[in-house]
Length: 186
Image 1 (cartoon, rainbow, N blue to C red):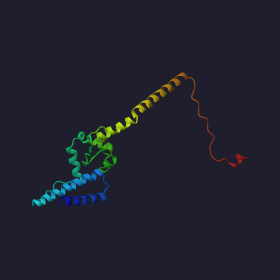
Image 2 (tube, rainbow, N blue to C red):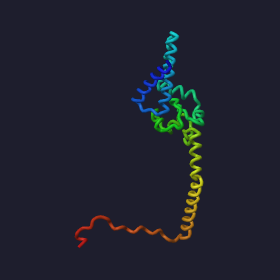
Image 3 (cartoon, helix red, strand yellow):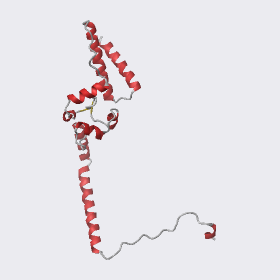
Image 4 (cartoon, rainbow, N blue to C red):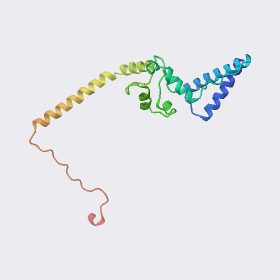
């Protein structure tokens, strides 16, 4: 019987996906929610008990319960990030996902009290990116670049101090470009 419930849940979610654009994580979350609701309905039916439909998995209800249950600091975990709007678990909260809630990344961070510089990705993903950047030599190359910029600024400052009396030459006026008239060509 569970296979039949799973098939029904898959059909319901497939219908949702055909009308709305959902991320993979959202599809999995929706499938779990629908399957759980179907199991609850089946259990109530077998026990001849009335089904309590008071628990709504609608978007408005979900936004309130997920955000209130979880501390925002706990939503960023080692292997996943949990969206405080819908409860979806993913490796990184993207602008596209937050747009489905009508929020920008900045608005989401302000709403839940994250620092604006806080990454909305799982710590494992951040560590992997950091490791890859170090393997490519990014920190050393950045330091070399910054040292070169500093050296150039100092050199330019020295040159400007050595020649205080010289004026900066004006740019020469350029001849107008375009077609020559026939009279000028003759």
